[in-house]
Image 1 (cartoon, rainbow, N blue to C red):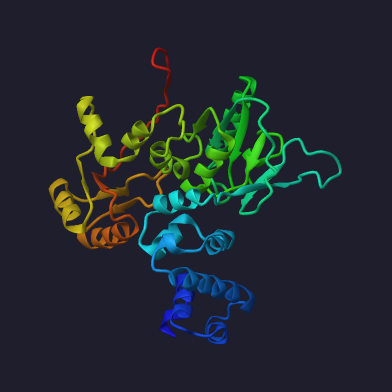
Image 2 (image 1 turned 180 degrees about the horizontal axis):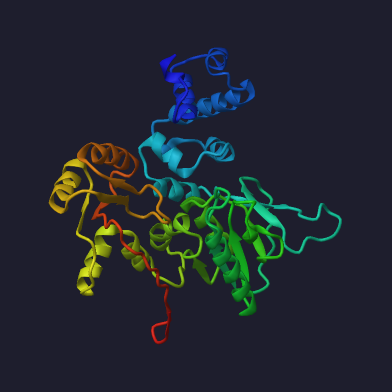
Length: 350
């Protein structure tokens, strides 16, 4: 009963109940969840058992491997079941020739031919993605956003699509947010309504064979994919993944500011509470604590004592144990001024 109490991650704990052998009726009675959805989760759990009945990934039959992908299992999930990395599962999947195909959603309901149809991936035989008429550029959107969040990311993606079209390219937008302009029928030449994950994006890149991939305009979600895409050989254009990492990694950015001889509040980086406490005691409270690789103030907090710091660090380390947290001296009564600049290496426009 305590396993299924209301609270964070309850839906994941439902899976644990099935792992422990609870019946559908017992879980439905304790949670009040709709039996239809619980049945889908139970079936996924059964598929897990079918997969793990084989000692090694390589021994999983082709038909079962394909069924798992058709059921929605990601390469990462399958890797977790066998103690393998996502990339090892991807390599094995491609060795077997198990690749997604892309189906068309007719935005004109067959009344007349849709100029810009939506596509989604599935593990089916027939592929409906139209061949390229010109050289292609892939633009990664921001993915799901809350209302009022991330409008600047969507604006950037839309302007990129317009500019690339004017330059003679076919634009391929990858985004899964139906409430943004970048997913409108007349914004891009091809819209792939897909999750912004390494697996899905790499499959799209392999399928569309673009001249370049733009990750910089969709916010933190595509930025976090830059390193993996680069390692997989994706042709990322514009700001390099290393420069993206330099801006996102608090420790590296601090070193850059120091090398440039610029002023910054007293600060330090830590990956555990003891290190953060030592920094806070050295620079004095209040401190501003923020994780690496986030935009827009998400998960940042002003901390006034060690108890607040311990509580924050416990949550931050659980969320991203390998990523450093920046502890800044918080400047009270300060005035903030933003400057934006764009440079091509020769001209700088402020």
